[in-house]
Amino acid sequence: MRKLLMLFVLAVMLVGASSCSLHDPLTRNLNQNSTNVVLQDNNYKIVAKVRGEAQADYFFGFGGFRKKGLIEEARANMLENANLVGSSRAVINETVETSATTFAGIYSNVKVTVSGYVVEFTE
Image (cartoon, rainbow, N blue to C red; front, side, top):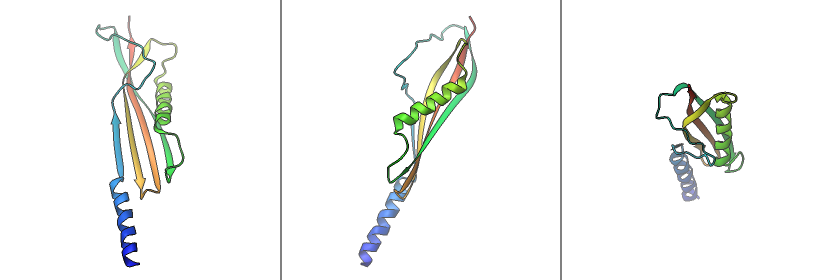
């Protein structure tokens, strides 16, 4: 009985220590619809840095959106903050960062942050 208890305690400690804080930065363009913008001339200026966030809680692996859904929600939040409608602006250098915090394999929180720079075309 004592060996079984020690094995259980060891398993809980390993799970808790191995996944205490995960950080998975993604620095690739995940857009399926892309617009090509040439930024080689002096016809633009960077006007803002924008970001959007989304997060989900999971209990025993259940709950919340999957990672792709969180990225889509964070991107929509970022684009809303960018105020692009009706202007000659675009978001460039989009970055996606994912972080997860897990407690003993029972509870985890996943947070996705999407950020980029807003450029405004002058000509």
